[in-house]
Image 1 (cartoon, rainbow, N blue to C red):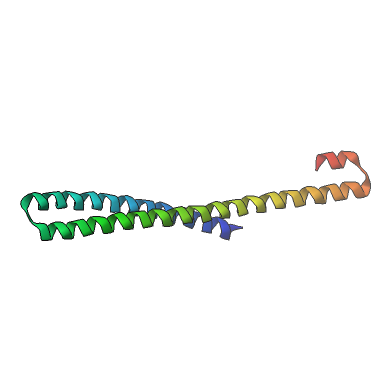
Image 2 (image 1 turned 45 degrees about the horizontal axis):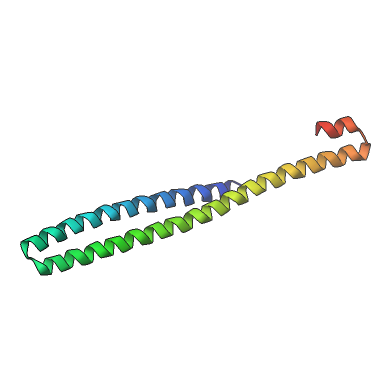
Length: 114
């Protein structure tokens, strides 16, 4: 059971890291856009093309990181569900065992206590 919980932690941690990287790419994109505006104002068209392509690349990178983070979040959600179901199954197994013992002796007080 510890293994699944560790995996869940790792998945959530990775998703957070990807979100942070996406935000960093968004900042880089705005920086490149500002450089692009300055280059256009200065009449540097070749530099403006470079800054524009950098801004586009950073935007795509940011979107890809967000998509990946979303997918990892979905996997983490499924792992969380598996952990919860395992706990519920273990609890139900204990209840059924207790009820089985009580039914063998037909002692209703023991059945209500388990």
